[in-house]
Image 1: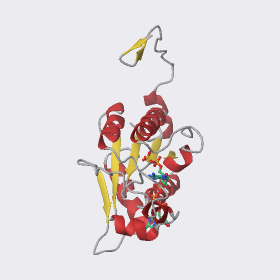
Image 2: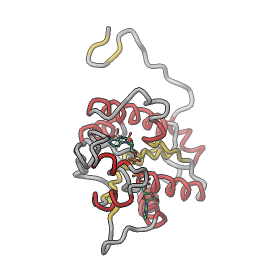
Image 3: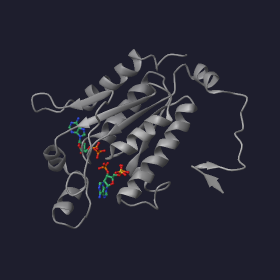
Length: 208
Ligand SMILES: Nc1ncnc2c1ncn2[C@@H]1O[C@H](COP(=O)(O)OS(=O)(=O)O)[C@@H](OP(=O)(O)O)[C@H]1O
Ligand SMILES: Nc1ncnc2c1ncn2[C@@H]1O[C@H](COP(=O)(O)OP(=O)(O)O)[C@@H](O)[C@H]1O
């Protein structure tokens, strides 16, 4: 039996090599870069661009992409609010493990509900959850429609599609916001630069 989510008769096992030592080995600080936004807003593009930029600088990162995880870990989940909540909860827990391993974990999911994102933030130590909001207008995402899903949603062939007939709740206090300037979307390299500069300024790219 468990109470309040804490399992009974289960004990925490400490391991001899800790987070600090792993971070020293990697010469970086573990953290979670959580990219949220509408389908087609550029989350995966940004995640890959940040991953490449960090790799070039000799920093170890790993991408947790919503679409990809739904092929395995989360393949039992759909898009009902409770399924999305469970999806985000699981990815939040996995991201926490990657950050504990000393990696810069880049999570890229629509994660439309504020409460679910905030719950992931609460899992991480102060300042090591970096929320990146892809603030792209719905019209831009819909025009891109890289997977043809907006068309299907507008035709009523997909129900509960984020931005169409399911809500997206923008962050209230994100660390980084990516948006258009004069109606033009920054290039993937420029977007990645914004994230990497933040990581650098906050000291995540140097050993603790
Ligand atoms: N109903 C509905 N609403 C939104 N998105 C849908 C839906 N059905 C399928 N898809 C596709 O699933 C991708 C989103 O998966 P996520 O795990 O990121 O979603 S969520 O965070 O649980 O809301 C999303 O990928 P991205 O376009 O990369 O965001 C879509 O391709
Ligand atoms: N900064 C950008 N400028 C122009 N097109 C972009 C940009 N970022 C992404 N795209 C394009 O938009 C589409 C959706 O991008 P993607 O990264 O798959 O979004 P998401 O992961 O949020 O669904 C793709 O065709 C991608 O090439």
